[in-house]
Length: 135
Figure: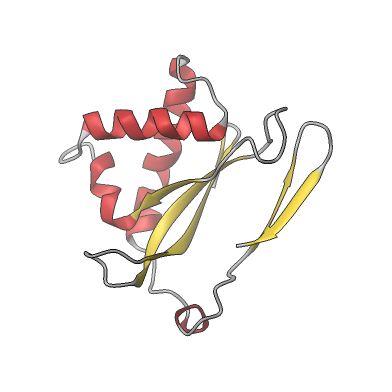
């Protein structure tokens, strides 16, 4: 879903830590629609893990944690951490896509057995340069 210059994509991420024992987990990736003028490596994708989706809940969430995450996301996306509108943009896109994240099905079988590329992404910066990658 696209919202005010940001796009949210539902996908899976391989988490290999003590708690997960190496497994594919649903996640939401947030990207800018247009790269900042600093070049294609300036903005980084931001990931909301299924395991942390509860942080964003109006009823049981963790507003302090969300505030820290949003500030980091703004930095990664090349947005202004001092601009309230940018904070609202990030929070809005996450909240609008939480249901989609929570209801994501298990990963496709070919992803689980080792074909780790699930999408192609093309990003065009403000100079017209395009960067493409398989993710």
